[in-house]
Image (tube, rainbow, N blue to C red; front, side, top):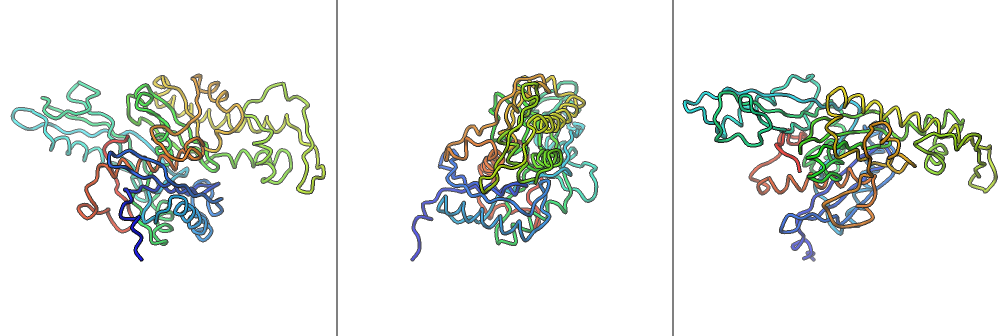
Length: 413
């Protein structure tokens, strides 16, 4: 018998993050006014992913299938398509400028001029094996007048547009897309994980003031800079929490699984003299004592790796000229945000106030909204909802080619 519940079901948006430590599927539901509510979540420990990229497809597919099944059960829905998060050290971001002369007799800028200058900005020179994930419009300039959001009907002889372009290796994206499509699901779009996290965390006011979002994952660390309401700088490091655990395992001569537990139970993002000479004796699964652990060494190793990661990000942002624009501060999310005193370390390195990254502007399951490690998945749902609001009904406009999602969009939330 046909289930009448599906006739009343509101539009669904599903975000899928295939991460290094976990696979997470987040289900959102849009009401008639376009408001978004998280109604389901599914997750599974990740086995086939390293540094944010799939290396063992069979294992990754099993984990994705389990996470999606759990999400379907949690939300009581059938998932047919997803917005897929992508990450990896191969992903790069840069700003590009497009220029268009105004040739009409009266020099009035029209919609065609705007479309032409955006098209010129998108005609970028990137490696042949790379794919543009996002081309984000920042602002326009007319002659010498900058920071214009809508130049239509203005008078001028030269129109320019600034865009932020995020791209990466095509084959790396295809691996994840092919895995999902092999499960008879549609990939609505691919989204840079760092961008998704920033959409989940930042308010419009914080974007306007200028803010840095750092997503500390297990295999990668992504970061995004906003200023004057738009994305100005992005990046991804192939370094994450797993690398901290590896350093601890080598220094203390313990298995990595034990090092990971020590990191969260006894670690600290800041190293100080209070732990000098401090040790403790852990117990094994049978309750028997093991070799003592030097807490001083543990925290020293952990602090040095996290500090190095933050310093690399600071240097890149400072070189790009955006550090002085971060009046809203630094926001830290991802599993690494649970490290003790991680916000204090961020404040020391960036010399700015630092805050925990929690989802904003969305309702639903408190168990998901309050956790920093779910920021990316929630952001994927928010991104998907924004695209659903803009696009015409299915059938009037289909996706691009067989595997590839839509390449460009104009504005973000």
